[in-house]
Length: 369
View: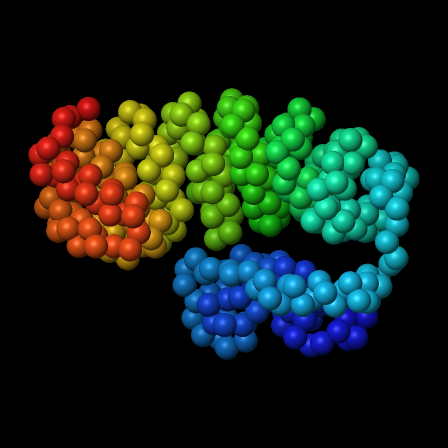
C-alpha cells in the first residue's frame, strides 16, 4: 500500500509512511518512532550519512512534511490504512471484549489514536463512553506493544485539561507508575513518563502524583537507569511535577540530586532545569553543596549549555551561593563572576536578569539564607 505514496513520505528506516516526521541534525527526516528506536539502541550516527551525532540528539518536528502527508491522506484516505475505519463504539467494544484477539485490540488502539489526535470533541466522547477503563487495562498488559499503543492513546486523551483530572480519577496514575516500574520496553517507559508530564499540567494533579507511592521514585530510577529518550522524558516529568513545592523535597529524598548532577555533566540541560527547582528547597541545596564538583558542573553549563540550560544554571548558582558562603567562594574561584559579566549582553532577558542577580550575590550584596 505504501508504494502508492511519494517516496519522500516514507521513513528511510521502516520504509513505511511517516506519521510523525522529525529532522535529525544531519538534515535527514525519519519517522519519530523509528529514529528513536535507533537512538535507544545506542547508535550515535545518522542512519543515512553515518556522520556522528551528539550524545543527546535533537529531533525537530518536520511540520511541513507532516502537513503534506495529512493533506494527501485527506485526498485518498483509504491508502493510509490496511483496514477500513470502524465506528468508534465498535473499536471500544473490541478493547473491552474478552474474546478480542491481540491484533484486533492493536488495530482498535491505532484507529482510536488517529481519530483522537486532533479532534477534541471525539476525545471528550471517548472519555465519556467508558473507554478509559479499557485503555488503562491495556496499559497493564504484559504485551509491550499493547502497552505502548494504549499509552499513546492516553496521551492524546490527556490533551484536554478536563480529561487530565478525569484520567487521574479513573486510576491512571497507578497504571502509569506500574508501567514505569515494570519490565516493558524503553519506549513504553518513556511514554509513561510523558503521560505524567501531561497530567501534571493541571496543578491539583501535581500534588496527587507526588503523593502517589513510588511515582517520583520511579522517575528518578528511570533517570538513573534509562537510555537517552527515557532520561529526557523522566527529567521533563520531574520538572513538571517539582513546580509543586512539596514534590521537591520528595525528589531529593528519592536521590534525584546526584543523578541530575551527573546527567547535567554529560550534557542534558533538562536536568539543570530540575536542579534549578530543587535548589529552591533547603534539602535540595544541602544535597547540591555537598556534591563534589557541583559548581564546576554548573560552570560548564554556563560555558557550553543551551539558552535554557544557562538560565537555570544561573538560577541554581544563585540559590546555592545565597545559601552557602563556601559555595559562593568556590564560584568566584571558578570565574563565575566574569562569566556573568559576559552574559549581561545576552539576547535572552531571563539570562541577563539571572546573571545580574548572581553578580549582586557574588559581589557581597546579599544576605545568607
